[in-house]
Length: 200
Image (tube, rainbow, N blue to C red; front, side, top):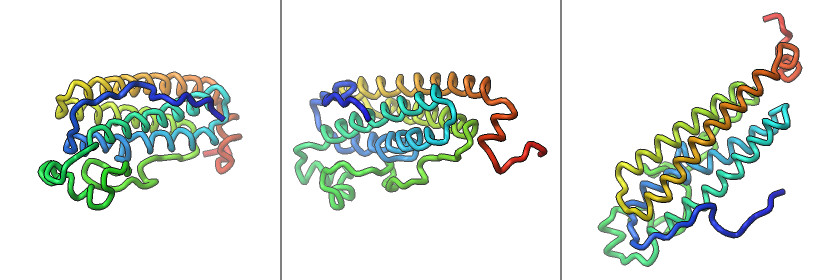
């Protein structure tokens, strides 16, 4: 289905472990506006998208979000490698460590585990695209929140890259919405939404 290059989309080279920082960034792995939810949202929504060019956008962005999952996982892994028991306890990382050691597990920064409620797939192309644009803005906001509290330049460099990609995705979904609105005349709308008879 895809040609997979076995390298990160953007390099992650963090020199200093910091488990507290890892807990913040973890939210963009499995949190409410994280990369798992984003990839599942777009790769699920593409099946109810009637226009190939727009379906391609959902596929492209959804696939890129999988790459962003890899980047976030690499950041968390590098921030939590070779920790002593004292570092784990002092940083507040112990509750996560007890359940997962330093394995990568999807949860929000507040500890709430990922679930399917983190993403939407309504099956209505207009609704889904507005959801997608909002999701990209929420992800951008989360990355900006991370940048406000994280000071490690090695981490911030990668987070800035991911933040910029959210802006690009927002723009692509805006362009896709315009294409759909141009194509989706009254007849098309009712053809793809058979529950409506065009009289309401």
